[in-house]
Amino acid sequence: MLLHYGVLFLFLALTFLIKGWFNLGVWPLVLGGIVGTILPDVDHLIYVYLLRPQDLTSQRVAYLNEERNFTKAVEILADTRYERSMTIFHSAIFQIIILVLTIFVTTSSTSLFAIGIVTAFSLHLLVDQVIDIRKVGSIQSWFRNMNFVFDKKKSMYYVITICVVLIFVTLFL
Image (cartoon, rainbow, N blue to C red; front, top):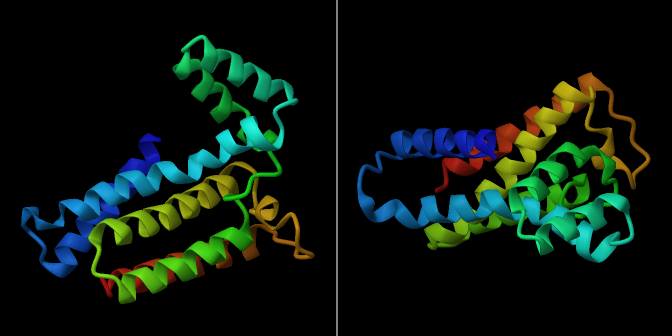
């Protein structure tokens, strides 16, 4: 989470510098960014409680949550991230949908809170893909329901493309 919030605040700082926004009127954008950074991780809770509650990891996390040991539950979810292959938000299809939504919201909405949510959501998914490329060597798992093969080189091209789109969208804030 520290990495995700670090990237978010760097992204926001650059946005504020580019736009010359040096007032407290942009607090809804920051708040939306904080919320939007958390939302993709809800994916793991959906998996644990709705999609695969019978899995051993899901049962362990549910038990720890019942015992109010949230820190340990989050640690287990982080350590077993690559075991969950049926997540909804961590897929290329969903990423494209949220990216289109990000473009739509940033170009047509005046709500800084909404803009912060969708931009941070997209940024979180992008950071997760960079982590996957570094740890696994590709983002193939993001394309699990498609007939594409993504080696490291293709994965980098894909991530760079998403990054360029996000930077371009920031210019419309």
